[in-house]
Image 1 (cartoon, one colour):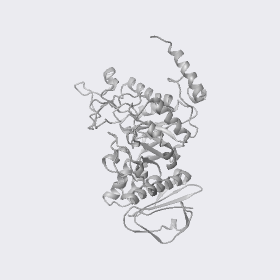
Image 2: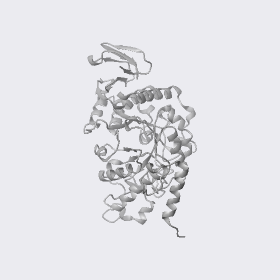
Image 3: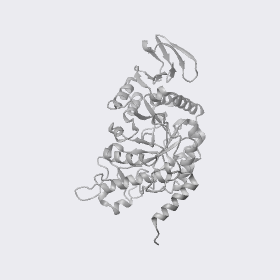
Image 4: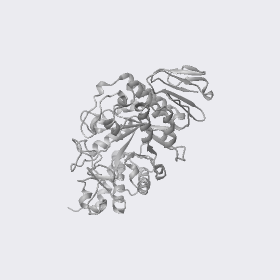
Length: 459
């Protein structure tokens, strides 16, 4: 059956205008796809973001987008303002890993995994998140596809091949469930950017967390981000590179990933490394970053480390140690990311290759209250979000200030399970206020912190 595609799109655009109150200002005048929804007016500035990572398979008993929607209030109450959804796309079954296959083995870049729901479910989730002043970003897998992605048979030249002409897995990996794309192929890059754009138009999403970003050419990211940022005239989008290459900022990314910082946190606990190594790691990660506004996303858990290395409770000394470590990750010149369940002290690892639903009824109320308190102060402190960092750590205590024109914040976090005496630098002596209680605290020659005790002071 033939039909006039221009008339079809004109009708859809009209419907979108009526049902979603869109205006010409919300999108390009000639989009590739009809723009669904309206610009998100409460889009957080990149310095203000609190990112909450959702493993859809684990987040609810149903393991669906609707299951995520049903707990939006809890995410909002935590203080997060950016929801990052792990890959929502159909998963390849050919050479699949695990029980259900890896969500990072994408079979179709322009479809919703039917196990998770429908495009309408995603649209509704985004709409409801926006109503609660939370942005939604999708996980994007640009480097490789599943072996049963249609591109394999329709465009085999879009993939890298060995000397025998066979499509290969990503070089230097054991990722046998995915095929390596060829970024020397212009048609493939155009199709990839088109697929990313599709979700901004059809689901009104607010950005992407880009998987395996260091291994995708910077020229591609520059082209893709430039295109994506042109779609909504009245709204920026957030772009997170799951990579540590400082050139990602030049390509337009808002954030890079704190791999080094996380591994250093682990060594402090596993190898009894001094807390000074954390400030050394901070310096390393920012060594070639010449824009003081840029920030690195830091975390004490994510889907990979949770499954393969352990929960924050396992890695960082139980409840108290994991909270003391989170304070450092959240406040030390960073944008914090929380992985679903860690805020309630969930003790089980989440296998994202299968359905492993979080039992939210086991929530540790006191731990959740600590997370809320830490995040709430960050949300009100421009010194933490935008200030200048100075380190004062010793072997046991991670100590640093974040300072702007109107506020100075001092963080002291004992990362050992022993009491620790911290000698106060002359620059830090004097009267402060507890950032959480408002109580006055005077710092003299030294202060003794209990095991895993942390203090956040301001003046």
